[in-house]
Image (tube, rainbow, N blue to C red; front, side, top):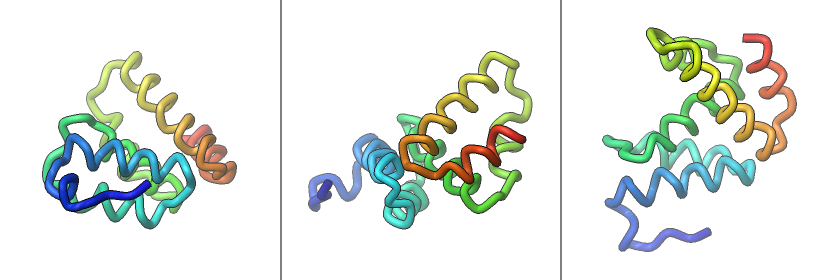
Length: 100
């Protein structure tokens, strides 16, 4: 995966790129891209940020994302995060997330 100048200021393209890197287990790159976005029209960058926080065992990002959400949206978010962590090969973070 390579990003050129044409993508550098397009959050609608960078957020999915960050997710693609996360799914490959390239967390430093994924998080770096996600963190530099000021907007996230796709919602994918925030998933990367929450999954990266889960890898570090930081519950605050997850709790904040789940706060005030109805149960079905909480479950949907958890499923998306589990998929990302599983695909990236991070079983330790996946187990941590399942215990939260």
